[in-house]
Each structure stands twice: as structure tokens, then as C-alpha cells.
Image (cartoon, rainbow, N blue to C red; front, side, top):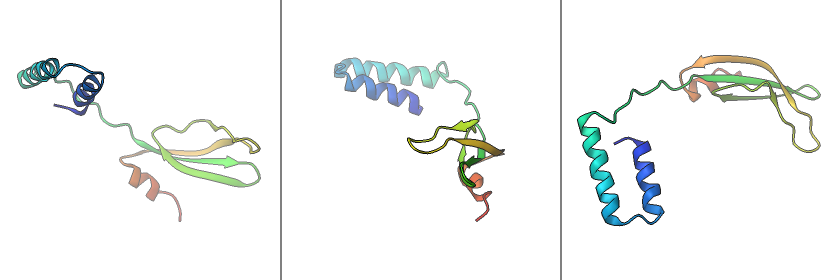
Length: 102
């Protein structure tokens, strides 16, 4: 049983589903899963991108994300930041952050 099915069962239980109904749902899900009917191919996780933003008077912000947005909105009283560089295809968040100069 994958995490998504567990989340669905947990939400159902939190809504006040009867114990009998929950057990019946779990039994059906397990039966379908064992039969291979409910299985789906897992999609590959998106790569990580090292995003560097130029902010105001020579400042910059660096962080990793699955997608670098063109702009970061500024908070009240600060300027917004514009994407300066983006390097993608890192296999993990740790590899992405390791790419930044110290």
C-alpha cells in the first residue's frame, strides 16, 4: 500500500467513517493492490535546480528548488529579486546545495 492510499484512509477515518466501513475499504484496497489492479507506474522525481537571485543593491539569494521562478516577491519595504542564474538536473537537494560556493 503506498503513501497516497494511507493518506486517503487516514482522512476517511478522521471524517468519522465507521470502523466497519474503514476495514472494508482497507480490505478492498489491499485486494486490488495484491491483484495489481491499482498499481501505477511511479514518475521520476523532478530534478533539483540551484537558483541564484540578484536582489537590490548588490545582494543575492541562493537556494535549491524543483523550479526557479523568474522573480521572488519582496517583503514590505524590500525590493524583489530577479533570477540571475539557474543550474538544474541535480539528483537530490543535497547535491544541489553542495554546488554553491562556500
